[in-house]
Amino acid sequence: MELSKSLSELKQTFKTGKTKDVEWRKSQLKALIKLLDDNENQIFQALERDLGKHPVEAFRDEIGILKKSAKFSLSCIDKWISPTKKQVPLLFYPSKGAVQPEPLGLVLIFSSWNFPFTLSLDPLIGAVSAGNTVVLKPSELAAECSAFLAKTIPLYLDSKAIKVIEGGVVVAEKLLQQKWDKIFFTGNARVARSVMCAASKHLTPVTMELGGKCPTIFDSLSDGDMKVAVKRIASGKWGPCSGQACVGIDYILVEHKYASNLIDLLKKTIKRFYGEDKGNFKNLCKIVNKHHFNRLRNLLEDPAVAASIVYGGSLDEENLFIEPTILLDPPVDAAIMEEEIFGPFLPIITLDDIHESIEFINSREKPLTIYAFTKDESLKKQILAETSSGSVTFNDTFVLNACDNLPFGGVGESGFGRYHGKYSFDTFSHEKAVLERTFYFELEGRHPPWNDFKMQF
Ligand code: NAD
Image 1 (cartoon, rainbow, N blue to C red):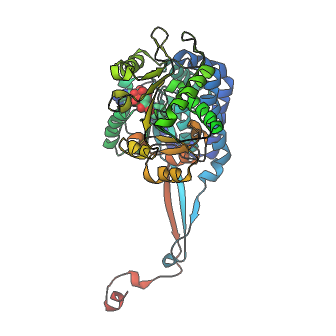
Image 2: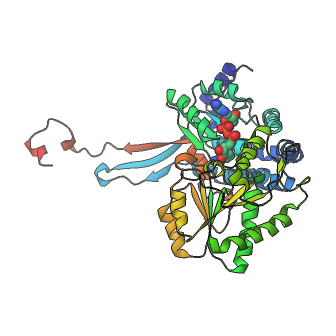
Image 3: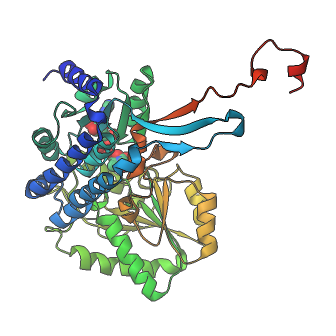
């Protein structure tokens, strides 16, 4: 269907009020759960073709997380859509105050390729729960997943209210020329700037889910705690999409004296988790395409960076695999330490004192998340008080994303706005203030004519 026809159908649907009906919203969430249940194998296949994602990882990071999210919304939606009573000042007596959420209208969702289902459907859950009509544009880089969404969503969800439009930059630009009531964008900060320019033309509100370099602070730990920490780091770095994750660990900050122990443990853990057969990393995703493979290869080509490799470093261009790779103290002004890595390289930067990590982080853009492995309460307080990031996780890696009660989103260069759970509902709603007064009592002093008596107040 032509773009203008699709959009007028969606606008017309919104006008009918159908999507505001809570039963409609619930029916869509249930249909989405059914879609995920009925098509588990097809989803696994699409993820395997686009990214080489293992079914266990695919279930954990995509199907499982989405079902949890849709079920959570289903269980809360009656509460979320109800007006919240608010106290009003005595001066307004007698009156009632409330906040009433209302849907924004027609919303546009742009998603990324690394979690092609989660990053498309999790915002969609929020948009539908809030009663909007939706256009979803998945990333063209995960082509099988995008095609699956375009083919399957109309079979389960209401196609008069929810449409998938596939395409790359040309389609994205066409979509951005339209007037939307909200744009929810997941991607990189450069593209986000053009999305914001287009949105400003219509004063369209935007949510920007971006990326950046997520640091991990690694403090001194007991041997037992260190083993657990290293397992969490290894699965947090290479587990989600081979490091092609906005919340993936970008680099580690550690005191010199603990670095060699940390590296030894990381090497053992990598071998145990991912094996050593460089031609057959079945528990690791591949790099999404040649362009990103070459981008990553270029990061390693700097001789000073190559010289800092202490583990891994092999690249298999034919199969687009890159081995988990550890680098010790690459130059901090090299591209690998200035750009978001978004791949399986893990630089370890050594410091004299772990407290220097605060200054190291603060001298760079605000990250999407900071991870810190420490039992030192004063260091935890310092991290919280003296750094700024979308989120902070102590003693684990990317699990915060699965907490429906915590907001997910960035700050500064890592984005703005938040979602997950109720935050998704709020992101796609307008909170309308409602004040209801009675006619019982009239304070004459509020009305003209102004005179000396009224001046006394
Ligand atoms: P991208 O910005 O290239 O693409 C994102 C979306 O924008 C896609 O749908 C794409 O088709 C569209 N797009 C691309 N070029 C465009 C243009 N010129 N105009 C309009 N739209 C355009 O990003 P990506 O490569 O898909 O993702 C990588 C980036 O996204 C990384 O920086 C990563 O950290 C970030 N990311 C963030 C999150 C998060 O939840 N915060 C999740 C995944 C990825």
